[in-house]
Image (cartoon, rainbow, N blue to C red; front, side):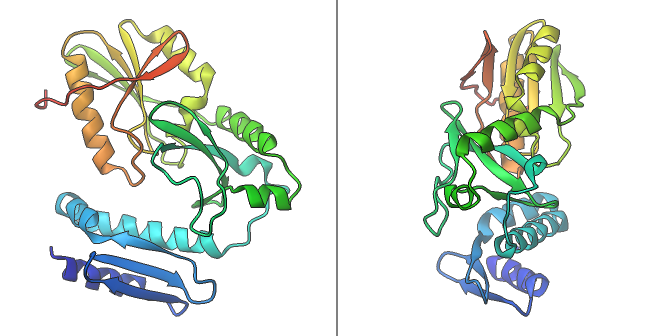
Length: 263
């Protein structure tokens, strides 16, 4: 798959009367903009081609869906009043921007050395990060937003799948509701998992759509966890961090684990 072929496939899938699409040949990127609002997004083709090599058309379907939802969210009128149950925290890496492209300050909190907490208004099949101007316009406070979001994330189901690898136990929360990683903010969930752990407890957010708890019981456990983190980080649509966290005394501490050969 070449960049030109990928560009042509996306152009065929993304033609809309109200969208303007331009191809940056030098940087191998597509720029999609709404003709009326001039808002849009840039898609780098190289990472998509890498995903296509592994997942074929499924990778293209996912990026097209993501573009459609993101473009729709950009032009939809945002209001907070009456939507308290639709406000949630989202986890992002510390390299994630703290302002929109229009210069609006996003509401966020520091979380760990690797992660930050942002706040989002759920729009059904997508969500919009909340900025300070929206909060001010509606007469809310940032603390109200944060308190509501924290309450809502605690109400989300936390069903997990359990897997054992070389004597180590891993628990995966993967509902694909956009807030799997956000469940790391549910202190009662962390304590519940801690009560089940017999070895060393790890917690991981490699991308937004998964939360992984590890019960590391032998010397192979961290090597397995490292391999797992690399796999999930590269597969995720919204990668967060390749580093897992140790959970001790109700605190999260990022740790470096070396990904060795698959066990």
